[in-house]
Image 1 (cartoon, rainbow, N blue to C red):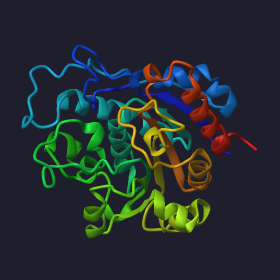
Image 2 (cartoon, rainbow, N blue to C red; image 1 turned 135 degrees about the horizontal axis):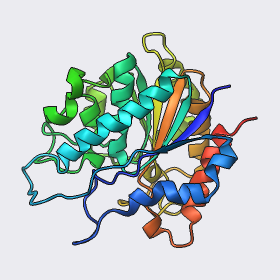
Image 3 (spheres, rainbow, N blue to C red; image 1 turned 45 degrees about the vertical axis):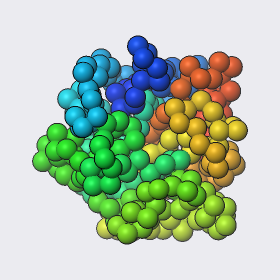
Image 4 (cartoon, rainbow, N blue to C red; image 1 turned 30 degrees about the horizontal axis):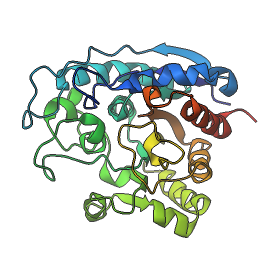
Length: 298
């Protein structure tokens, strides 16, 4: 049985400030999950913390590209070093964010090793890039585009490894039925399923079908990117952009356990949950419970 290692990546470099003079609170995600005794509940080993650079957008203006880009590039390499170490050792890293830009660290790490896929469980595709938007800025809403090589080279071509993920190795599940980026994903043949489609087919059924494609021998395995905003705000309001029409906990649980219990799954990251928006800690309890149900030894 693989050794689960919990690693903190408390970066908020990829999000806009919630208000002038403040910073996004998702950097507290890891601490909130640890307060839920996540390591003990998973029987996990301590992986420590990858400390991010300071959040400072300086004089950024729309049209300047991705803000915090230099800091993001530095942090992506640093996080990739740690994730690569654990994957090569045969561990199963559980990376606690942070915003969605931490996915770049995982994708770069796996690209160093070989060719890997990704299962993206996210309320939005995070596929904004210069080809489909007036301007870019927040990497936390652009990380899938960046990981597939779309965007500025200082983020998309680290170590000359662009793209970190091939389009055909990406699976996106849980986007809202009205997602504006779905048409582009379909045109690019990036497999995706909206909440409505997941309900039509059944969460377990669609997860099983998608898993078969992720386990294809063309790749060496796959990663799971879990964004808390894939859940409906009625159960998970503590995210930066709550959007109605999300998954319910039982539906997410079916997807998550199907993917992470595969021998080809090499790790996962959790992002976007903001403890500042969850004064009673119920969101942290829900996420810890979902991870325990999917990952705890049996």
